[in-house]
Each structure stands twice: as structure tokens, then as C-alpha cells.
Amino acid sequence: MLKAIKIRLYPDSDQQIEINKLLGASRFAYNYCLDKKINAYKQDKSSLSTSDLNKEIIILKNTEGYSWLKDAHSKVIQQSLLNLDSAYKNFFKNKKGFPKFKSRHNKNSCRFPVDAIGGINGNQVNLIIKLKNLHYKCSVRDEKYLNKNQDHIKSASLSRSKSGKYFLSILINNFVPRQMNISDKTIGIDLGIKDFVVASDGTRFENLKIKRNNHEKLIFLNRDLSKKKNGSNNKNKSRIKLAKYHEKLNNKKENYLHHVANILLNENQVIAMENLNISGMMKNHNLARSIQELSLSEFKRILSYKSAWHNKELIQVDMFFPSSKLCNKCDNKNQDLKLSDRTWVCKTCGAIHDRDQNAAINIWKEGLRLKNKIGTSGPELTLVENGSVDDLTRNGPLKSTCSRKQEGKIVRFADVFENK
Image (cartoon, rainbow, N blue to C red; front, side, top):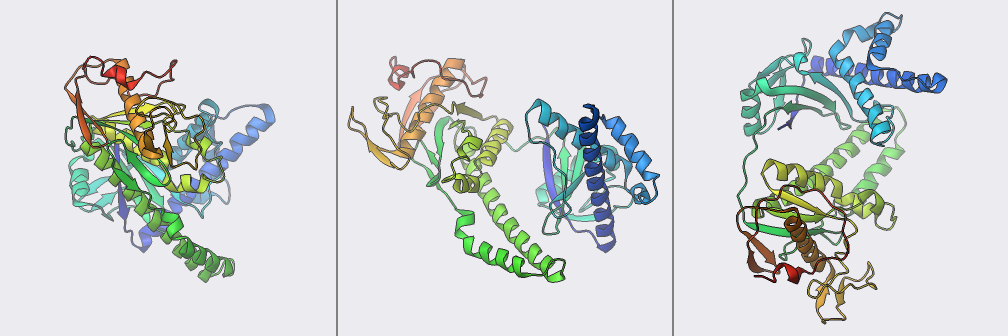
């Protein structure tokens, strides 16, 4: 199992100069070779390989005016070209975005292969010859882990944020995570805008509204930046101040996402959630800003890898499943339900539903149906709905957690308990 441990570096003035040179050379090589690949494709539809690009860089090093590239570590430059090749393949094979030229004003990074990493000694890390004894800070637990598992380091990524801070992400192989509590509960969660997470057992996690609650301060900092003269030192100071504030807000949000994910995984063995189409939801311009602020994709990613770490099960219900429109009591579908309706009354059984709570319960039920359909064998699970506890014996552990297309009419939840 792989895990990246991110540490903050505190280089001295000479080390900062060497790092900035390395980041600049890596960025230049990436942009230069991207331009070469684009022009080659335009001319004769040819594709330059990584070895062809390496030859281009070697020729460039011996060209007048580009001799400064010789000062950069060759393996770091090669890793930059490998990143470009990977980005190019993702565009054609996986329909990802086309590679973009890197700007020195944004976050800059470069990657060190394992043979370009000297090792870790206490609270200092050694990279290439020119970057030795780099002082770093992280948690005591991570520092001990890094010193103990130096032989399992695969690579390291050096980065400089917009605010001028330096970080190093060290990729560790054979990572053994701390095990969470083994629970016998399963739960369904609905992700929303009014409340960030609503669980089927009634638990709610609020939406912090990080950007909206700090909107006035962001406006002030952006306005202050726009008034400064381009190229001046004051302009740079305002830019750094704005970048630091954005960084502070993002750190708060990321910490909250991990906090919510840890609570859900620590208290439940199986979590059912909707496989949302985030990119499609972003096309709704009335909700795009709120959805982006929530970072739903990041929360889904955190839940996915942490559930794999801690031997938990994450079931993703199909995005077309009408979780909000179904009555969780009688399975009647409310076709007239609008997005603005936060509560509604079932015309068949008369039950009064909170929209988000009802959706969470339906996701929980559908997750249970998918789990039973896949086939299981294992211990007894405790199913929680609206604070009441029901015990259902299942036939074994879940083997797959991937989303599946709905097949025909939804199975009534009462059918699951018909033999209980």
C-alpha cells in the first residue's frame, strides 16, 4: 500500500536559491517539450517519445544561452518529461484535459526518483548533492515513521506554493495504516448543500461555507491586490497575503473533510453513498459555486482510500437512483418533487419526510440491496435507521464496492425482511 507523507521544508537562503533554480529548470523543460510535441503533431501528425524529448534537452544544454540547464539534476528533468508523457497519454486515452503550460506564478513542483534521494536523518532530509540537510517539520508520528521506513521510499515531490512555502511529499511503499474500530453498523449518507452530510441514523454534519463566510475579506484582499502597480514589491506582498489567506481557508476545509470521514468510518463498517455526477452538477450555474465550495469530489476520494486502508466497505449507489423522490416507508415515487421542496408528504401513506433525511435512508436501503445482491458471508450487521436498531444476518463480507446500473424496478425494502 502506498501513502504520501507531506512535510514542510525550511530551507536557508542558499538552499532556496537552489530549489528555485531546480523548479525553474523543471518547468522550462516541461513547457519546451510540450511546445515541441504540439508542433510535431501539427506538422506531420507525429508523436515525440520521451527518449526523443530527452535528446532535445541534451541538444539544448549545449546550445548557447541554455547552459544553465546543466546545473539542474538530470534525473529531475527526466521525471518532468515523464510527467508530460503521462499527461499526454491521459488526454488521448482517458479523455482528461490537454496538458497546459506551467506558469511560474502558480504552484511549482518537481519529482525526485528514489536514487536522487539521499535519505532522512532526524528532522533533516537529504536530496541531491546541492540540497543536503534540509530542515523540515511534521508530526512526531510521521517523523518517526519516515526515519524508520527510509528503505521503502519510492519517490519525493518538491513543491513551492503560491504563498512561497516549500513542501516535500514523500511516497512510502508498504504503508501499514492504523486500524480503526471494527463496527457492526452500516449507514447511508446523503451529500447536500444545506447540510454537508446527512446520515440515515439522523446524524448531520453542517456545511461550513468556508468561502461564503469569508467573502468580504476575500473581496478586500483582491481589491487591494488590483490597486497595486504591476511589477512592484507591494504588488508581490499583496499577492502573497491573498495566497496565504486562500491557503488558510483550504486547510480548514480539508481538515473538516478528514474529520467527517474519520467519524463515519470509525463508527460504521459499511457506508452507502450516491455516486454523484459532480461535473454535471457544476453546469447548474445557480448551484455551481456552492458545489465547488463543498469539494464533494475530494470528500468522495478521501472516503474511498480510507475505507480501503481500514478494511471498511464503501458502496456507491447509482447516480440515477431517485433517492429524494422515493418514500422510505412505502416506496411511492413523488414525481412532482422540486429542488426547493425541503419537506414533502407522501400521497400514498401520508408520511412526512425531510428531503435529505429521506434520501439518506433510501441510499442506505439501496446500498443494502446491492450488498445482498453481490453475495456475502460473514458476521452480523447492525442496521441503523432514525435512531432505531435492527439486526439483520447477512451471508458474508462484501467483495465489491463499485457502482452498478439499476436493473428494472427497485426492490421494496420490506422484501429484504420478509423472512426475518
